[in-house]
Image (cartoon, rainbow, N blue to C red):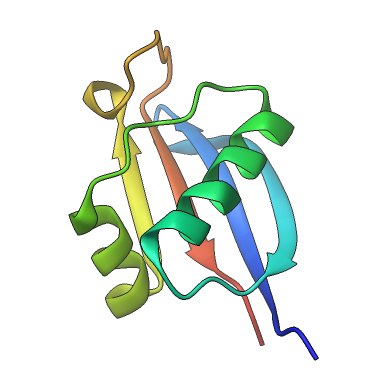
Length: 89
């Protein structure tokens, strides 16, 4: 049986949640599957996928959240930041 993860993904602008979704998918155990999950979330939010560094994955595993800023994107990202948080019960 496959375990699921629930992620609260939110786009922040001026210190407030501009747009958010709750995402449920297969649990990830490595950077590659984490990146696939991140791509799926970004597709659903209709934003570009940020560059994923090992530090981003480590922060998500250690602190159950990860933040991406404008400089983490190759394409234009006109918002303050993009945050994903583990919302799994």
